[in-house]
Image (cartoon, rainbow, N blue to C red):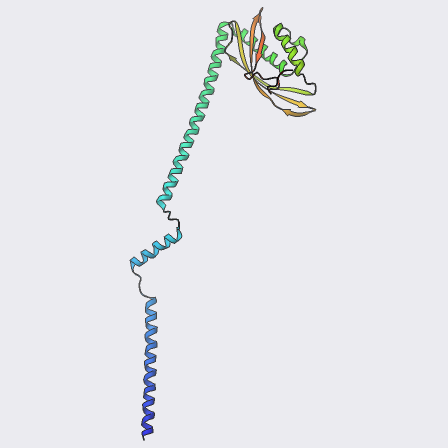
Length: 242
């Protein structure tokens, strides 16, 4: 009889322990499920968003700073464009002023002599410069276009610089009136460009500014001097004469 009672007590204890264990499991499952689904507070959401923005922007740059930088760059570009436009305007004005000054000088020549004489002087200056640049040593073509003293000077200079292997081809001569150095004379500036070829191959394309002075002999103008701003030689290289 005692043994039966003992077995019953053990059976009840076992049932009790199993019930307690089952209750613990149920409580754990309920707590786990309610923790995942609880509603997040607004201030917690704000803090998380702020932290996310800081993570995405580690350098700490915000839109205001970026806009300030872009605005400064745009102002700098605008100022640079304004400066470029002013430079172009000044260059254009300078060119226009030079053209007006040259036109005034040529008009002064026309008023002092005549339009026909000024045109004759320009043609003579262009002819002599072409003879010089092309190294023409047929001196008959020079006669009547330059003074006798200047012809002697050209004969000496071109004999020293004559290059039989090189061939010259004249590209252009642009004349403009310049201030005369002496009374009774006229001066023209001339921008000249030409090709130099050796054995059919182009070796250089010089460009040079010349100033040509003409004086009146009889009824026409003839060249009595020609110079360059840097006193350069025929090739524009500034070599010493031999």
